[in-house]
Each structure stands twice: as structure tokens, then as C-alpha cells.
Length: 214
Ligand SMILES: O=C(O)c1ccccc1N[C@@H]1O[C@H](COP(=O)(O)O)[C@@H](O)[C@H]1O
Image (cartoon, rainbow, N blue to C red; front, side):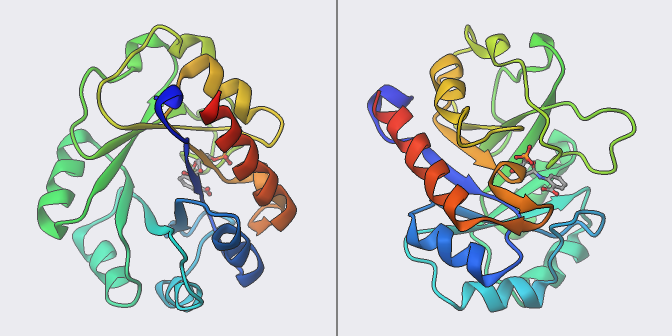
């Protein structure tokens, strides 16, 4: 919880060296790569591998997959060393992926109301995100914000992360209201879809960390 330590920060959807280097320089905890072709942030396994060989600092790598087969994940792991698999799938499938690959798995929970909040963690961490609109072309990365007040009475004892519509100027408030121990951002640190802005990355990490010390 924030009062006991710094907030964990994940910057997701890196496609270019300039954004990647900013994540490392400013001390992001996790750097995410999107292996979902319909995303403007899509990277090939080879592109992700090329970025990580620039050096990771203290950051870990997270590979994001939407309803992946084992083959989809294996194809990426042949090239890119990933520390965490973030997946959009059922709880049962997430559990299976963890067994098959022996890596920590983070599972997205799309939330429309308090009834959608998980009561336990089926894998290593859950991502709490807004449920995307029916016509969305992807399940996340839509700059869509959750009603944070919905989380104010939710006190999970398992690892979780808040995502969706976070930005430099709202991340501190989001942490204050929700008590999130970690935050995840993509659109909020971009100058255009898929193009990360180093200055926004720097400010986002700083503001999230300061919220964690409050
Ligand atoms: O970023 C994407 O394109 C994406 C595609 C498919 C599934 C999830 C995706 N992004 C995840 O959503 C969060 C929040 O995004 P945003 O900050 O609201 O743009 C992002 O960090 C990813 O984990």
C-alpha cells in the first residue's frame, strides 16, 4: 500500500529507443511490450529484443498478450527475454499460462462496477482496468479512466495494479483515492498513439513516486 513504500510504475507499449531509454533513465519498475497486432503499440518479438539489449537498469520486462495461444507466447520468448506475462484471458487460461511458462502472470480484470472487482488473485497480480466500450478495437490502452471511487473501499491483500486513463496530472489523485500499490500507463505518456514522450515519462514516474510517499 502506498503509505508503506514507493508506488510501482509500469510504462507500457514501448516501440522506440527514445521512449525506452526514458523509462530506464527515470527508473520505471516495469517496461511493457504489446504483442497484439491491432494495437498502435504493437512490436515484433525482434523489435522488443532489440530494445531490451539497450539495457534495462532496474526495470523488468512485461509482455502483453490478448487471448494468446501457447505458441504465440513461445514465439515471442524465442527472441525476447520477458520477466512477466500480462494477459487478457480467463482466470483458468491465465493459470494455465503460468504453469506452462513458469513465469509470473498478471491478469487483467475489466471493471464496470464493484461487482467486477476480484476477491482473490488467481495468478501473481491482477490489473484493474475499465471495461472497454463494446466497439473498442482493443481491450486496453484506450485512455479510458475508471471511476476510482469504486475502489476506495476495496482492500485487497494480494498484488494489484491500477490502469486506464492515467496521466501526469491525475496519477497522484488516482493513488490517493484507490490506494493502488502500482500503476500502469500507456496513452498518458504519449505524444501520438504508439509514440512515447520522454518528458511525460519523467513527470509520470516522479508524480507516481511522490504519491507513494504521501
Ligand atoms: O496499449 C495497448 O494498445 C493495449 C492493447 C491491448 C490490450 C491492452 C493494452 N494496453 C494496456 O492498457 C493499459 C492502460 O492504457 P492507457 O494508459 O489507458 O492507454 C496499458 O498500460 C496496458 O497495460
